[in-house]
Length: 144
Image 1 (tube, rainbow, N blue to C red):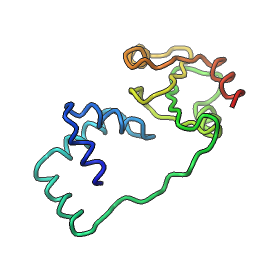
Image 2: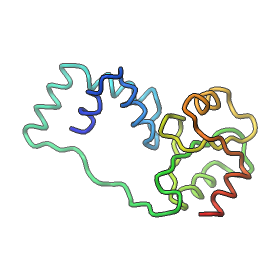
Image 3: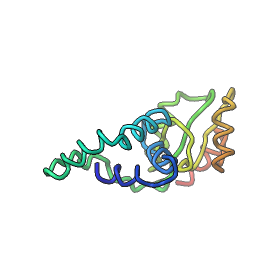
């Protein structure tokens, strides 16, 4: 929790905080911004700091160590693909990659199938995220 408070202290209107949290599976920009707003609220912050001073540490190591060739690489899957997204996600995770739901500065690749929405493509361009079609993803996975 202390690390989140420190990250919320960065003076860039929450952009670093939001970008960092968007790299966590299941956390998108709306959730990250809400958490940021919660943490910068002086009343909430005082309660959290008081709990930390009393020794409460709500963090627990639950993440598995990933050692695959795509370890540290973050993927977002969008559009219509030849296989179900869960299957593609499983293949990426098996190779050590991580799959999230929204494109951010921490995203490595956007896997774009047919009918990909303009929003994710624009976010990929804005954040200089490489866009892969399904064939390029298959080649990347085969190499790892």
